[in-house]
Amino acid sequence: MPEQKWPQHLWIVRHGQSAGNVARDHAEQAGLPLIDIATRDMDTPLSSLGEQQARALGHWFGALPEAQQPTVVMCSPYVRAHQTARIVVEAGQLGAGPAGVQIVRDERLREKEFGILDRLTRVGIQQRYPELSEQRAHVGKFYFRPPGGESWCDVILRLRQVLETITREHARESVLIVGHQVIVNCFRYLLERMDEQTILEADRQADVPNCGVTHYAFDPQAGRKGKLCLCEANFVAPLVHEGTPVTVEKDVPGAPHS
Image 1: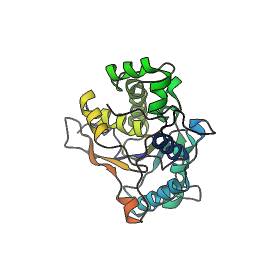
Image 2: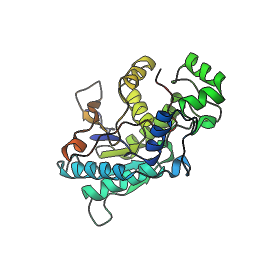
Image 3: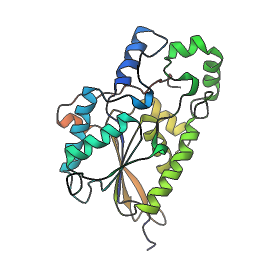
């Protein structure tokens, strides 16, 4: 048998509900062109409900068999993702010692960059940049790159590097990644070897819930050398079990599904 390069478990989680999710939802419902957020997107914190969701998730991780509990935690450097990771580690009492498992902030796990469309709602994009709205509809969100921003392909490129780091440094461990909606979907694209149509169809069917869990486990019998296989996608039972509301607000500034 070849040496195992993959973690034993890989958990990929979207951050808890943030103040930006709430502001975006309000702006979209009111038909406003701009999302009213005082901070930079990367500095937007969790809402009180988001903190509650992260604690519920931490309790769930802490109740898992020790062999499945995360020994490595990587997160987006955005405040809402780091807060989620910290609360999960503390609430789940993950790792030995008062500090728990060390949390590594990795800029490659950051939110997709929206460029000049940042903070704009669907209405705002159509009003200010109608030509970009038309271009996006023609090209599709997988390949469309707004000026100063990223396409899904750009995000996938940096996540390929993250997977290289994980296989090089964390074989046979249990790794938890805390990121954003697009990060979760793009990891699924890579790990499940999807194509454009498959991942966009999954994205159309449902948004990734805040603190939703996507879990992969290593199967030594899969493929020629063993691989990570999907166990659950967008799993929200940890929140439901504690009676914590499940939220699925899009990240800022979400454009319509297509």
